[in-house]
Structure formats: C-alpha cells, structure tokens
Image (cartoon, rainbow, N blue to C red; front, side, top):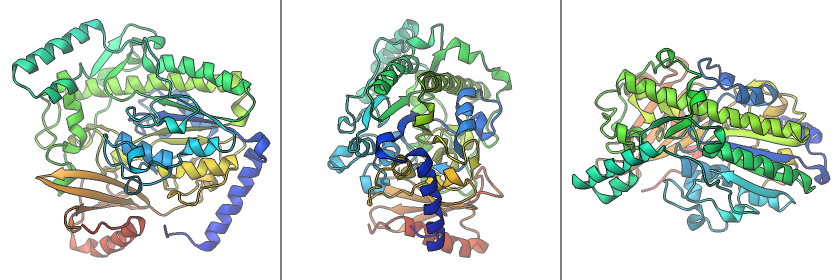
Length: 503
C-alpha cells in the first residue's frame, strides 16, 4: 500500500533493526512466542481507559508492553478474521468471508504463521480457539489443537430448559436447522471453580505445556485461544460479583446511524443481531430496525459480558505468572489480541458483523523483551494482518514477501511513529435478495465505506463518518455535498488498498 515515503521506510527499518538487536540477536537465542487470542473482546479494558471494567491482568501486560490504541481486524467475524491473522493475508485473498469456509479449501498450500516459525526450529502448539473452532488447521501445529474435556457448560437445569424449548419449537413446526441452532440462555452464573470452565481448565493445561516446552531447549510458539467473552456468558459467580448491575453504564447511542444505508446492517443479519436470537431467552428480541432491547436486558447482557472479560483476564494473569515463575518472561514475546470488536447496544445492536468502528476496532498488546516503548501506548493505525510480519521481524525470521500486512516492529521502538496511513476492513452482506461487499478504510479522521454490488461491481451506497467530531459514528455524511472532495480522496485511498471487484 502507498502512504509512506522512502525516507520514512528507511528510518522505520533502522529502528526495527535496533529493536531486533535487543530481542533476537541470533538464531540460537530466538525468543519464544506466547500468542493469546480472545474471542469477541472489544476495547473495554482498563488499559484502554475504560474504568468500569475489571481487567487488572491485561492491564498489567499493557503496563509492560505496547498497547495499540487503534488496531483493526480485517473482517468482524471469527473465521475470516482469524484466517487473515494466521496467513497474513486479507479476506479477498484468502477467499474466506464467512463461517463455513475452510481456509484449506481456498488456499491448500498456504504457509501459516506457526508453519513458518516451525521451519526455523520452533515447536508450535495450540490450546483452544486460534482459528475458527470448526477449522483448527492441523497443518499449522506440531500437535493437534488441544481442547479440554470434562468441563461444565450449561447447568443441568438449563440443559433441561433447552431440551424442553427445542421440543416446543418442534411442535410449533420450526425448521430443523433453527432447532439445532438454538442454545440455552445467554447468561449463566455458576457456582463452580475456574477449573470447571473451559477457559480455566485450558489455562491449567497450557501452563503444563509451557513448562514442557521450556524444558525441551528450542524456541516455542504457544497459542492459547480463549472462548469468553463469546456468548453464552457462562462464568463462575465471583466474576459476576465484581459488578453492580445497576451501575453498569449503557450504550449512549442505542439507535441506528442517521442516513445509514440499510445494507450496512442487512435485512436478515441485522448487523449480526441474529446471533443473539439463537439463545432461548432472546429468541424473540426485537430487531435493531424496530427498537432497542429493554434496559433490564441490556444490563443483563453487559453484566455477563464484563464478568466474562474479568474471568478471561484472570486466566491471562495465570499465564503471565507462569512465564515469571519459569524464568521465561525475558525470553518470550507476548501478544494478546481480540479477533474483532463487539456491540453492547451501540446502534441498537449486539454481537459483531459490521464495518463500524465498534466492530472492527480490536485490543492489541505486544510485549517484546527489551523494546524501548514497553509501557507505552501507540496511536498509530495498525491491523491484525500485521501480526505475521511483525512477529517474524521480532524473532529474526525472514518475512515472506507475499504477506499483505506491514511489520509493527518500528512502533515498539518509537510509539509516536507511524507505519501506515490507513486500515482496511470489509464485510459481505445480503440485503433484499442482492449480495454486496462493504469495503471500509479507516484513516486518521474518517471511516469511509463503499458497498459494492457483487453482480454488477457498481457502488450501491456509501458511508462517511467523521471520527473526530462523531466518534460514535451516529451520522453518515456521505450524502452531504460539502463532503464530495473528502469522499473522492477516501475512495481513491480505499481502492489502493483493495482490488476493486468488477462484477
């Protein structure tokens, strides 16, 4: 992509080399990688200035690493986002735009990030959800992905409740697919220890593996993928008790943006809202096109989400404690990232699956031992597709030439610098029987989206949001005549980042 001068690239490269000299001077002492993925985690964390969320362990990581204040996913839903992270390629290259496409069917010969590290002596092991959970990609790892067994999901009472609800659906003539898709309640507070929850148990097992990997001598790439705060919000009681539900702030914009084109939410997907309707206590929830959820429902869901964040935060703390106890912290790069954002009532929506800031902006923290910027925050635009080249550079590995991201290593030396002038996201949408792809570019001041009709290649709608004056994106400015010059410039920048579909 364009946007930086040759002189700037030279300075950035020099800075990156200086950083590498401190963290990975030779192949014999390459740093380990602890790669932590958190599902549906938005930037509601203390490290991002959100004081009503309890996240002391992630905040602790941020205090010793570099926090990326403006990092963006490439598509705000699990499978495409994770395929993009792990290949270093954008969704239009991977051809993974949905939840049902296996990366290996579109790119059978792709060399993923852990595969590349394995070429240089790394032992790569995964726990939990790194890729989309139905496609763990065995080719990436030295061992099959570890998924713990014997943990509690729903309580017996809620399992019975779900079975009875499905029977009623069947009696009412609901389609078999809808019955199968239906889940129990969206929230459940459980009287059980962390160990009986998936994320708690897998942390214990990952710590055992961490010690094993440390004892074998060579560098390792250990990936740990947490399920929460994905729905359903099932966590031990002590995390619920961290919050007073009545004091949890609600979204200040529970309405659709003014002049939003309807395909931005879509007639059936409703901006990802359909996912919430797959839980029996929200099966009849009103569409965001009609009205927001009740205040009671909003508080319940926010409470469950934040309790889940605090639960996962505690597990991250256990991993960090493990690194310290085993003497690995000074030789291990730690990366924590969320695969996309999540709506908690913003624009009347819940879940993800839009091109809005709230869905595409993600938490990203990188701690490289010895990095000059550790403990600081950078506001440079960054993308998850940048992780592959970044970790290669930090580890002293060759960066594959085909990658579509750009190394963020210079920002670990100088957080006030910049490696790119734009971040790109996209989302497909079917609306009123037609298929569209929404292509989005985020710059310093604006978010601009073009909705392209797949059949014809024509631009069917545009969105323009001023992130300085309207950070909640409540008013689409695209139709205002005085924005014409801004739109022309942003459209040009957009199509330097994407190959425009021809229809």
